[in-house]
Image (cartoon, rainbow, N blue to C red; front, side, top):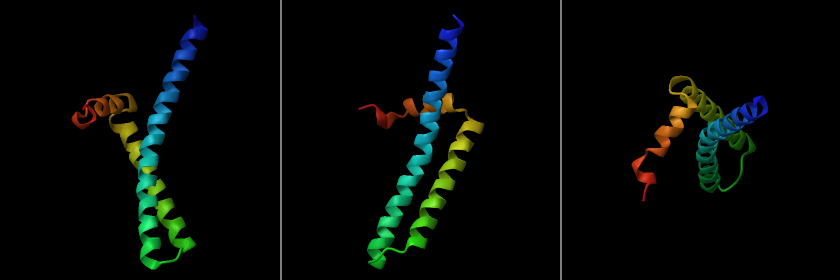
Length: 89
């Protein structure tokens, strides 16, 4: 019984970690788009610019994920995401 309960808890933690990671990576995608647009504008790749934009978007993503975790909780955040009207076609 104890093993089953620990297994369910670890699966729940894994699902919550994946949700946290999805929040972070969504900001990283925005950073990647900004890097692509800036590289197209300058017509060359500046490594310092790429690193700074990607690092900034990663940090903003981590802060947003932590804010969601602390304020609403990841379980409640997942419920709110599932209740979004635009997700139901």
